[in-house]
Image (cartoon, rainbow, N blue to C red; front, side):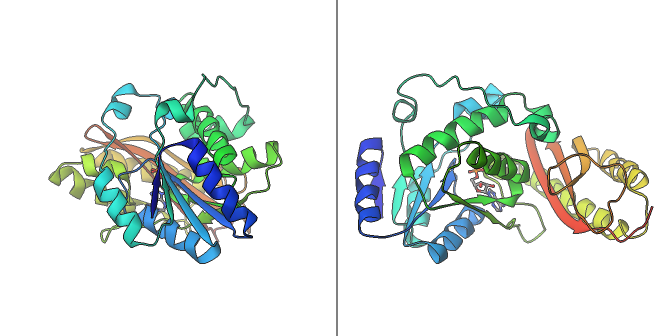
Length: 285
Ligand code: AMP
């Protein structure tokens, strides 16, 4: 695996690969690599000749400075994991390399950024869009791989690609979970032992919600799910929403024959976690 920090070097290397007719796959991450990231890499390796993973903790997308400061960093381990999993290039730029000058672009993702993560983390998706656009310009991948764990981010990136008419295939990848159902996340490293156990309950509440969606009106189910979270005194729920997977607009009735996603954000201790599940409701209301 090549380890590169310079934009010029990675551009040059990838230019040669493209000229040789090889396809470039890209997995952007913020490091503290876990199995969720590695599964994206597996899918990338299955779909492209050259797999590039980036590690860059982008300050622009953190609306909470404390979260940025404490974001886990495990570079030596990350390098070993990526290499053993077959990654070809690890791009690990400095802030200066990514932003040689300030990028103040203001994107407008319309209603997509006015709900859930967009509403609760002001500026977050703008920061995501700025860095993803910059990384896309550097790597110029044929395909880029994003996890459905960050479902709203996935739709924002798809919109970004449409906005600029980029010739990049955005490949959504399924959520990878721990044995107890907790969605893998770099932030899980910051949970204490008891917090980690508590966090496992999030998935069980979501699963029960999906099961109950066949026999309950949406509004009732939402109130019920909120109650379940509120009963867990070590979980502080920020939001529970049911939305259409097409555009993430909030639903208050089950749509017939259309896919629904339940999305939540919750704090366990100081750590903010998000999760979601997709399903079809068969309940007619
Ligand atoms: P992050 O390093 O958290 O910015 O994540 C980098 C990429 O990995 C994003 O596309 C995430 O959606 C994806 N990802 C993170 N955790 C998971 C997971 N548990 N399952 C699937 N994809 C994930």
